[in-house]
Length: 260
Ligand SMILES: C[S@@+](CC[C@H](N)C(=O)[O-])C[C@H]1O[C@@H](n2cnc3c(N)ncnc32)[C@H](O)[C@@H]1O
Image (tube, rainbow, N blue to C red):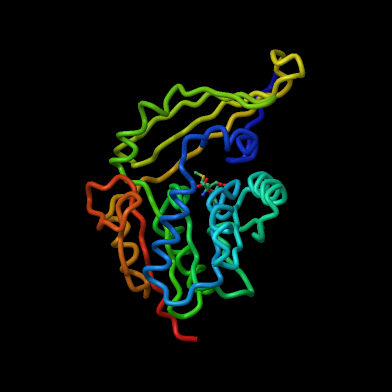
């Protein structure tokens, strides 16, 4: 059988929630809410980028505080997110959007992205494109919040991510993970199989290669210096604790200074 080389997060969309079953998204949503409430006087319109299957946006919607829009490049992930929202009767508008082509008629008080999604942008030019796109859809004084993972994170995580396997319903996966410190790229390669009703016969097989550029704090700060954003804070982990070069995940909080 020929393995189909698929776009990232297309076949994997069927398994994503199983892959992330140990992630505490409620805690992550509470952290984002805390960051927003700490740094914005009157946040109403909030957009999540790279929302995946919508876990954080759906948790935030339960607070009944924000008008939520959630976007992702992958149509398959957005479809899963919409199904979950319908089951929970959650009021979140989902649609597809690429970091590299951000556009919206609506303006936002807050735009955010979590869980290494920014690391799918492979170079400075693409990060700058994302930052400028957000500037165009943020209200003056609005916040851009995003996390990125650093070399420390890749060095710590690669051993337990490598050779991971699992399954859900008619799908199963095997993951190979490797980090190339010289080029600062982290590769996660997923072999995914769709099984027939007997649970054994493979009817389709897919391969997705996920490539993420891993940024140090210094690299990210030098990219941000090229923009007019005001740096409000940089947090380590899920507390309002200042990040430094040793942090493995860093959440940047930036204020849009554009005058309109
Ligand atoms: C690790 S997942 C995180 C998803 C979600 N934020 C979560 O916490 O579960 C990375 C997400 O980034 C999205 N993504 C990758 N490249 C993107 C791009 N260029 N524009 C928008 N989303 C992108 C993927 O489709 C995927 O849903």
